Image (cartoon, rainbow, N blue to C red; front, side, top):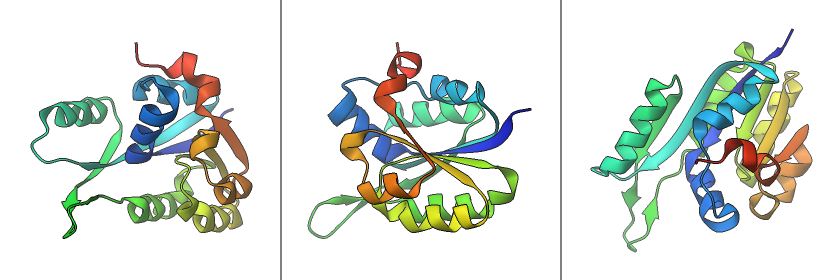
Length: 162
């Protein structure tokens, strides 16, 4: 019998990885299906700071939602200095904690060191945490904290958007 897992995808982090380290796009549906081979997937959460009135992005988010993926989104904010801000790390952390009774394995698609403490807290509840990212974009603190690390480059042929 497969263990139950939940997938938490930091969409902004994944976009950065695709653009800067993979030179390829990930098919989110194939990504989820890859993990279905090994786990009974309780739910997949996709977090994204989005640009309002971006039709292409809205179409993508609808595709995910109609594919059974829970989309959590916030509009990007422009700061006084002109830079853009759209951080959903707290949302990811809250959802991982609030849903912890629904999964045995948390699959975190992010390399952000901000998740190090969250990983230790979830492990104290007996959860196994898997990090999926690239070595170039994963903090040593997060890689050290998780139970298992998967480099997206290793599974890219199986999850690449064709």
